[in-house]
Length: 136
Image (cartoon, rainbow, N blue to C red; front, side, top):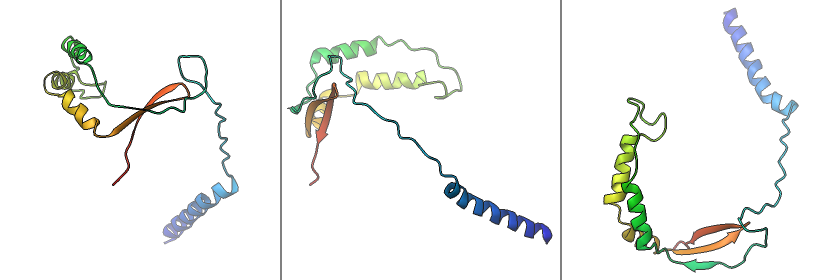
């Protein structure tokens, strides 16, 4: 009986301590000061306020180059029994590359993507691509 009473008292003290400790010893977190930075390749300039609308249109030349690169992919032998523990498993990567080479229809995907309004602008020297969609 005394053991149960002592455990109850100890538990109550732990709970009270957990509640009071942050109030008695608050942690002060200093928020870092972030300076305005320019991330572009060109010299620092003023952000453009121009927003350009565009449609996704990848040239056949780019798609042919991608297909050649995928065709020339060199795979390493996987480490047996490791799944994805040491990176992307090359047996599965072969399936992904084959899908992109033989089954993925980029032109069909372009049609799906171009159902939405696409825009580009520049913020802090970085070209930003975004989609603006209003819910119905």
